[in-house]
Length: 265
Image (cartoon, rainbow, N blue to C red; front, side, top):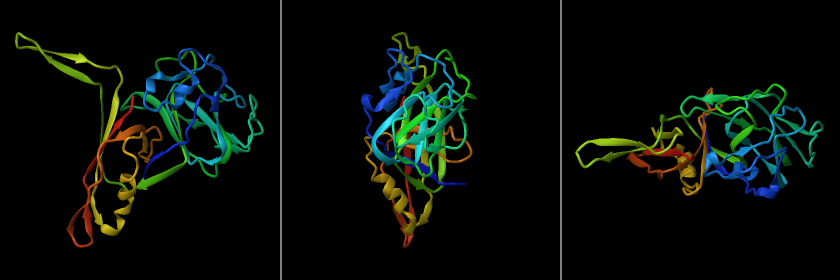
């Protein structure tokens, strides 16, 4: 199996860099780059399917290498990525980059949200478009107009080899102790939130560099973590909660600690 992918190398995008086919207030197009608040989301004012007119597209300012796109919490089950050196407006039929297929979007059962990580090969262009192609259908609990929670464009990535990996999801709650001695449980949110823990195996010290590189990522910034197994929906926009610690039990060997991640919702 391929290595786990992790990245926090995202282009800085503002409202002026984003063009949407339509928009419904207060679910504005700029919400797709608010990586800290998933449920603020973008909502189009349409349910249009088109091979040439994008749902939303981005001006990267100059030609940029993009190695992956993460569409997080969306309500369409197929999508395609197009790119070009120029702003093609409402007709991208002549786009010079095409991701090559209508990518099927699946629901991640852990969090009950539709999402997809799409690797890109050879993308080095200024403009990037997200499509709702003719084969797309609305999915999920809201199907009246197209919605997108967040979009992450990934400029570069790190990889780390497979290790013991725990994942779960939970809705936040608080137990309140009452004066009569009983208790009540208060629901603090309706969204399942993914958590993951990577327990780092013992390995040769010469192979430690992958986790030293991960540790150097700014712990205050969101990362995309993609399991990179068989399900391209198993990607998460999260924060890393722990630093890497390497213990040397014997010359030439290193044993890592457990690194925790928590999804941003």
